[in-house]
Length: 194
Image 1 (cartoon, rainbow, N blue to C red):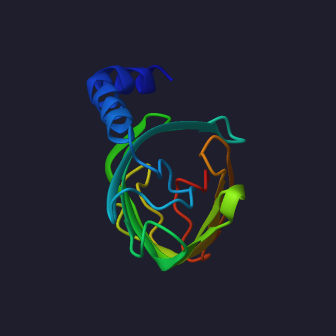
Image 2 (cartoon, rainbow, N blue to C red):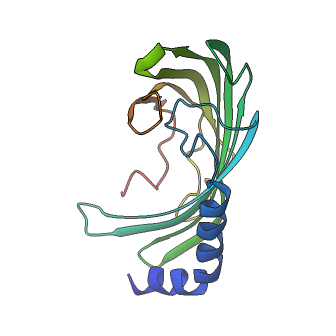
């Protein structure tokens, strides 16, 4: 645990800068999340996220990960009125992982997806924004690193996201479904604690 704290302290400037840029960059953006069906203000949008996770296995081994995800999102179609278009994204993670006395740092797996999107104006009730995608997690992370930075296999994904916005955008309701079909070829040591 203290090692992760040291990693966080060492990278605190980067984390704060990434967070500040995310806040400034999202100031006037319609789509602040990959799980939000609303088209962004421009056809291409860059999203940067910082995350931290920690889990302890049944064997009492703790795995901690500090990650930074860079997500490139693309929409086409019109901004106004009813619209039909295309949505796509590419998500690349940079990870710092520790598991017991082991440490690794580098690029994780690349996740890509593409699919149809649409918006329906519901008059005085507001608008409904929907996007769906099919995609894959591609094995770009180093599986030889200990702990592994990737899973070493291609996994299929699909998802469905929808956002309802009231007429004056004072009310928002979101729903998300994201499914990962993990192939069973070679489970990395990041999952298997044996």
